[in-house]
Image: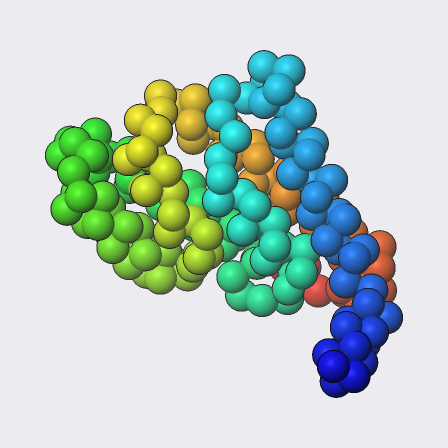
Length: 162
C-alpha cells in the first residue's frame, strides 16, 4: 500500500493536472461550440487527440500535422469508402485499414484518427459539415496545446513542431 501511496504522491507532484486541465478546457471549448450551434457534431476521438496533444506533446503522434492531417485523411477515406460501399462491417474495416495505411504513407499517423471511419460508419454524418467540424476542432486542439507548451517550456519556443 505504501508503494502505491508513494507512486501517487510522485505523480501528483509532477503536476500532470495542469495539462489535463488544459485538455479539458480545450474539449469544453469545442463542446461549447457544438452546444451553441456553431458545430453540428462533437467528434468522440477528439478526446483521445487531446490526451496526446496535452499529455505527450513531443510524441510524433501529437505533431500538429499528424493531429490535423491524420484526422482529415482518415475521415476523408472513411467518408469515401463508406459512401461508396455502405457502412457494412467489411467496408468499415477496409476504411480503417486504408486510413491507417494513408496516414503512414503521408507521415501523419495519429492513432485517434483511426477511429474516425468507425464514427462515420455509426453516425452517417453529412460529409462537408463533418470535415469542417473536424478541421476546426483539431486546429483548436493543436493551437491551444502548442500555446500551453510554448508558455510552459521555453525550449519548445525554439523548435516549431509541424
